[in-house]
Length: 304
Image (cartoon, rainbow, N blue to C red; front, side, top):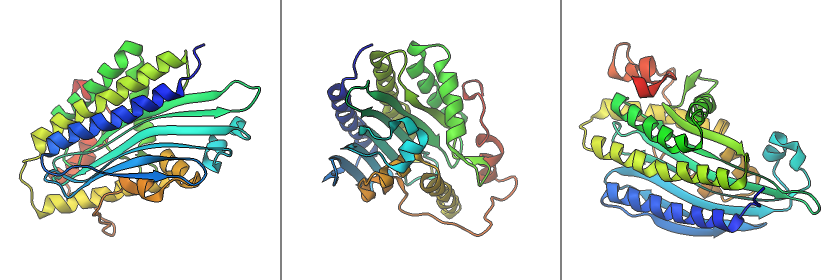
């Protein structure tokens, strides 16, 4: 079996951050990402890039991190108890884009690599990641194009990969306390280490490279759609669901906080403005209600 090439993974992730930022800046058209490099007490660091108050993007973050240490946080050993007593390295690119216009979906992507080592034993490693789309006003063409890009990224690695990772995404990005999906899904995978390193690394790269070409055309199509206070209010209330998921369920957020990561970088995914109206619900039969009635239901988006 091919030994994990940590340096190759890191080089790819740094290049991916550069590429995604460049593609997003092109569709944004006005603002640029600012970079904040940081070091982690205990080992490692990263570079956080944030774009705020742009013409299209209200807040966006594209974060690279590479952290390491002698002891894993509780969230990791609870998930994989066999890792206790090993040194670890975790690296990845994670991003969230919150546009101004409620007709432009929020999007998220993440690709990551983890390795835990112990003298005299084989390393334990895996890849994880994916991308998902969170619209406020659903559009069938956008859903179809998003999932076609996801399928195209997976197909070279097996005819069942897209179906498995799509289902995993639907199950993962689900607010149990609300009994509703976060959005229309995409791809999610974790603990990927078979059949070998080269195969897994290529699959992770394919998914990472597919994100921006899938998302930027949707932004271009919807960014000039007219909207008013009703649409903005709906967007801000729905953003509350996004915050709830990230703070309650997201594995990456929990790992980052428990491993002593940089709080500002970990919480960059949170939107700048959000509302929680008490017992808030959309008006029955409205275009806002359509999100719940049709789009927040897992389905075969390639055939709608």
